[in-house]
Image (cartoon, rainbow, N blue to C red; front, side, top):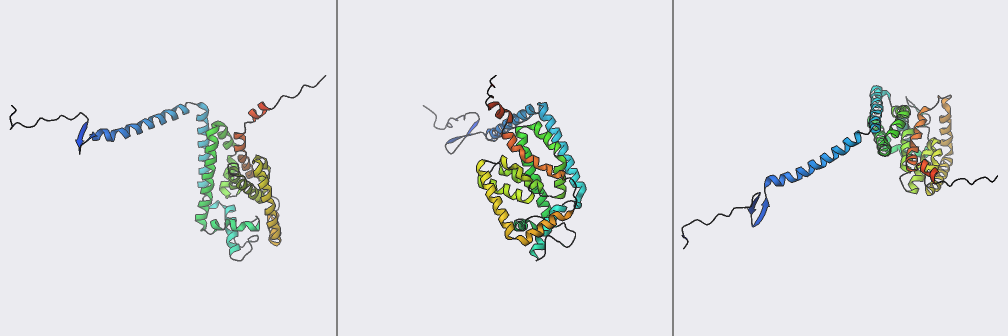
Amino acid sequence: MADADAPPPQLHPVPGTIRGRGRRVRDLSDVLGMPNRRRAGVYRRAIRREASRLRDHRRLIAIVLLSLVFSLLAAGMIGRGEAAGADARAYWAGVRIWLSGGNPYHPTGPFLPYVYAPWMLPLFAPWALLPWDVAWVVWRGATILLLLWTVHWAYHRRPLTTAIIVVLLAFPVGANLDTGNINLLLTLMLWAAQFTGPRLSGLLWALATWMKWVPAVLWFVLEPRARRFGLIFLCLAILLSIALLPLTIQQFQALFGFGARPVRLDYLVYLWAFIPWLYRHDLRAVLARRPAAAAVPR
């Protein structure tokens, strides 16, 4: 017969667990350790994957080339300081002169004249209402971020080819970043036109073409429906300029009033807009699918 005064038997919990409110709970160190171990495993796999990529000599060369180009561009922008942004300041001042009742094509003060279509002035207005120091940072910062996005897209597909193209276009890219000319933004608009629906694609192409005319050569990179919309929007742009004919005449007078101008090497930046079409349409594969020419009878 069991002794009534004897203590009840002790229940030994399973190692690694504790009992609480009728349910078995893991040890606190295990609870905290499992997510950390999973996270460490993810980091290890990511590091191994990146290390395997760095063993590719072509990718290493591409990284070195891109690093040198963007380092030189950054040094140039820092060195120029407040002297940069003459073209962007012309757009900014043109809108402010127009809003105050002046003539943006014949500005007063140390500004270059505004030389684009008069109906495009409201398009610049939301940005031009900012103070110049803020507006210049927004203009250049947005341009750099969008440019880096396009470089990332191209690098992900062809690293070394992309790096070589960036090196060849370093001067026109740097010139546009220095002056704030809209060429680079129009190039990025033409990039976006190749990734959007037909209406927006045609609108972007038409706006870029009516501002500079150089983007007209990129009409064929658009999808067939986007080409039709592009021509429609371009006709609308022409009609708007005709409706504002007195101001349009002043626009052309300001545009051609600069006299002899040097060769515009900064226009070479538009070559960057061909990259999405070239990368997505492998010319070698297209030529390989072309049927062989019929033999000429003798």
